[in-house]
Image (cartoon, rainbow, N blue to C red; front, side):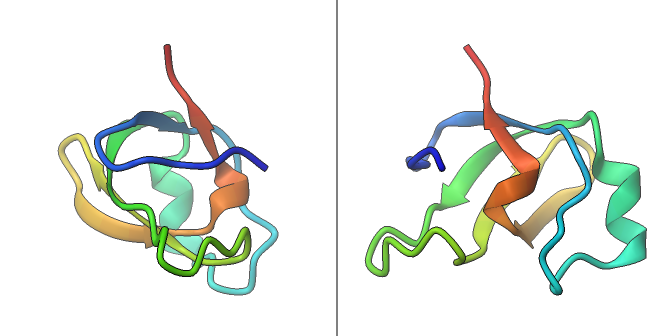
Length: 70
């Protein structure tokens, strides 16, 4: 599991298997965003990451649906 940093560009590239994934989040698949709050104080791979998604606002997403861009 990658370690996400504040300001990092990411893509929501797949549906998450995490229980926090809601059906409406499927519309975010394929969108890009920037990590706002990587939750580094916990550094838990199961923790949600706050991502500002282009055109969709800021959302807390499971890490298994994210991948680093660039």
